[in-house]
Image (cartoon, rainbow, N blue to C red; front, side, top):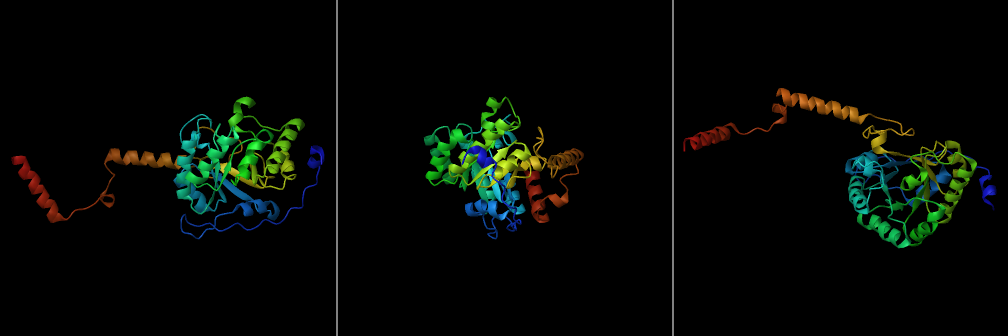
Amino acid sequence: MSTAETAAKPAAAAKPAAAAKPAAKPGDGKREKRTITEIRESKKTGEKMVYMSVPDYTSAQWAEMAGVDVAVLGDSLAMIAHGHRNTIPATMDMMVMHGQAVRRGAPNTFVLGCMPYQSYNTVDRALVNATRFMQESLSDAVKPQGGKSQAHILRALVDAGIPTASHIGLTPHTIAMFGGFKIQGRTADAAMKILEDALAIEDAGCFMLEFEAVPARIAKLISEQLTIPTIGIGAGAGTDGQILLCYDLLGVFTDFKPKFTKRFAKLTEVAVDGIRQYVKEVKEGAFPDDDHSYTVNESEYEKFAAMVAKRRQI
């Protein structure tokens, strides 16, 4: 079947959304980790899968408590945790260190490790670094970036038994080629290229793919041509699931706000107000008060005070 014929294939009828698994407190053993099979089957069941990028132990705990399906160890942590201007400075050592913290914070959550810049530019390098994610940070799967041009690498990872996803549309690792953060797939030809990338990812054996910064209708139509589930960030509601960055959606990272980010909370405002109150109370001598101080036995205090007084006389 030609690519054009594939694009014209009618969409399957929508099915009722499946119920999500219940959330639980981190480490209590009550929550069941989502499986590759469940993620794949979400395409058929209609369950909207929720992914969230988490950089550290605490945000991973929040993800597990809230019932997020997949915690994504995103290389965006180079920006939100280390203050870099983009994701390019992320290294494997950095990702593994953060990945270990994420796993400790979310022991019962599926973790998807995003492979950083140039960590998968050859098959050998991809295999070594994907193995590090699986062994050292205990990730459940890995996600490089790219479609047709990376299909041989994706296939090599899958053939090695490493659960693999990929990322197309706006790919941050090739941002210089795009001339900055620009929407992808706004022309028919550009959209066809994304479709061809998506089909190559599916053919390589990947269990899922992510669209970034793709027009909603384009992402929806491409998703309908695939048998594997899709997630979107800035790709509309027609994908099979959604992903946002934890620190974006909670209003923790405030250097800038992408159009696709919805603020579900404003934690930086809450945090700064709290810190200002702390500064005020310390300056005024109101903190710490008796409720936040430890006590000592009165007789022991008097004995110590006498010892101090005697020492002064020596």
